[in-house]
Every structure is written in C-alpha cells, then in structure tokens.
Length: 451
Image 1 (cartoon, rainbow, N blue to C red):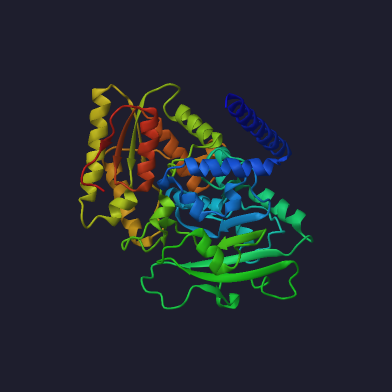
Image 2: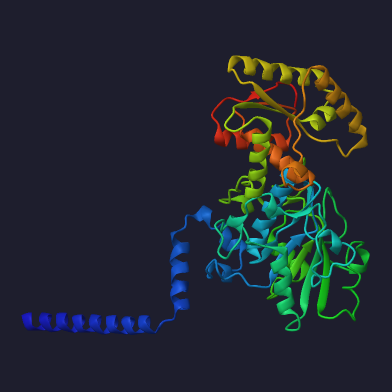
C-alpha cells in the first residue's frame, strides 16, 4: 500500500512539472501585446465597481494601449469657445476631456481680444489648413499667456486630458498626410438652450450651415471629405454618441470641428447654455482647476511693472473693482457705495499695516455700449476720491497690446500683493483670489453685498 501511494505521489509530481514546463514555454513565446492583455485584465478585476466608468465609455483599444499610443492624425478644435478668457479656458479643459476618449489631440486655440478661437483670423473666410498665414498682431497662441507644458507631449502629465498640439505643428502634420489619404473633416454644430428639440440629431446637409467652408463642399476640392451634423445639447451626450451620430467612430484619422463649444454640465434645467452629459462621465474624473499657471512672458511683464510702479521688494495693497459686474447688478446693489467701501478698506489696511503703496485695478471699457456710462461714472468717482487707477501699458514693458494679455499681467500683479481687496465678483475676480491665496495666507477683504 505504501508503494502504491508513493507511485501516485511521484506521478502527480511529474504531471505538475510537465504543466509548469508547458506554461513556461507558452509564456516565453507570448508577445508583449498578450502580456498587456493580461495586465489590463487583472487591472480591471482589481478596480472597485464604481471606478470602471472608463471601460464603458472608451474604445477597448484605448484601454489596452499605453498613453503614447495616440494616433498622429486625429485632431479636435472649436471655432469658438463662446466666453471670455476665464470661462473660455474652462470650456477648453472640458473639450480636452472629450477628445481624450477619441484618442485625439486638441489644437491650441488663439486669443483674440479677450476670447478664445480655434483658428487664426486669416482663416475665417477660407479655412484651408494647408495655408499657414501670418497671425495678426493682436492674435496670440494661448501658450503665450499660460504654461501648457503639462498638456503637451505624448504622454503628457495630465493623462485624463487629451494632449494639445501647436497650430503650426498641426499644419505640418496635415501637410505630411497630404496625398496619402483623404482628409476627413467632421463639422459639428451643437444646438444649445433647447429643451424640446423636434428635429432628429445626426448628419445634415453641409450647405445648410452658414459658417462651413464652401470650398470643402465642392466635389472638385482635392483631398477633403466633409460631413456635417447637429447635436441636441439638451440631451445627455457622450463622446461615443457624437462619434456614432456623425459617422466617425471607426475612422482612423480625422479633424473634428465644433462650431461653438460652450462646455459641458450634468443635466440641469438652469444650464441649458452648456451641453448635457450623463453624470457617469464625471464619476471619478475630477477636473483640474481652470487656474492655469502663467507663462514666463506674463510673469516677466508683471515683474517689470511692479518694479516700475512700487520698486523692488516693496509691499503693496492690491485692489480689484469689477466694474462690469457692478454695472450689471446696479439695480440690486448700491454700486457707488461698493466702490467707496473698497477705497476706504484699502486705506484702513494701509494705515494698519504701514503699507504706502496701493494699486487699484478695474476692468477696461466694456464692449456693451449700455454699460459704458456706468464705467465712466465709476472712474469719475474714483478720481474724486483721490484714487489713481493702475494700468499696465504693454508698450512700456515689451508686452503685447492684447486685452487678454493685459488682463493676465494685471492679475499676476494683484496676486503678488501683500494685502488684497476685491469688489464686484465674477469669474475673473475668482481667479485673482485663487492665485493670491496660493502665494499668501493673509485674509482677503471682500466688500459684502457687492456681487
């Protein structure tokens, strides 16, 4: 009986050794891609149930690819980001989240006055990507204002966002592609602020769109194939829905152009001005702060302005009065009292902390003609109170005569103040407060009842 048991034991041991040898040989012969499949499988199994959002939203190929596997010829851009700089950047970041799921890159937009646009001004009448025209003086690439290094490269540091590509590199890559395959352009119009949209979303005749390049719809125009579609912004929409409706889900390369990108939101009856996306899109996907770090160009101009105005290493009080918001809300608040209160508070701080320099900043002359009389009356009030407004002049500091650039330099100056007084509210002022708080632990004086 003992001999039988020993025989069974040695036979089982031999079988185990054979199995191990077979597994070893298969493992040696397996490719890197097979190993990657196993790795992805085990990672998926280890994820908690609520963290598997990306599995349902993203092409499985994306999950099995490294961050470096972004195809070279998939691009997304918006002709307009709808709002001024602060909210425009927020809208841009939401587009980066969408484009990541398409494995595409987003073309770095341009700053025109104080708004973001996807293409240079010279391209408006004839959007031919292969014609890289010289930019006008007041039109700037966004990375002249902000550091975007974390969004560039492949892989980039912010892996939850699509990488960005300079407009010039975008042009060069399309030039290299020219002649190899037809360029697929998908022009997407999102219909916002519609609670009950009767028409069915999907592809439409490009001739019905006013802003589409008519040359693209010409059958004799070489190397371009254009498709146009409409999306109902009030219906919860994911990137894969847009892909399916517009017909480019399985395309290997393309350019997606949004006519106007107004950002995204969870379904909310008070926010029909943005595109609705299901709540699952935001699950485990915390957006980064829209307070992007300033470029060295902006920082350098702010430094020179401070040296010229107060001197080097001199303490000063920063005051920001958001005149446009005060004018808009003038029916509900005492706008003049708000301004005088801000001036009085800054003078109290000056005495209490023995700070001799105070820099008063306001927004510039509003574009809205109806608000201009308010602005002029505010300036007269400040002058009557003995206040001289601080204004950064780009011509004195080798800067750029662009309203967005000027605003960012002044924001950088206010963020370096020893003490800060704010009045009026708004998203621009919110970013000033955020930048100041990152550098300074001193309390911020907010004029109550003025926003």
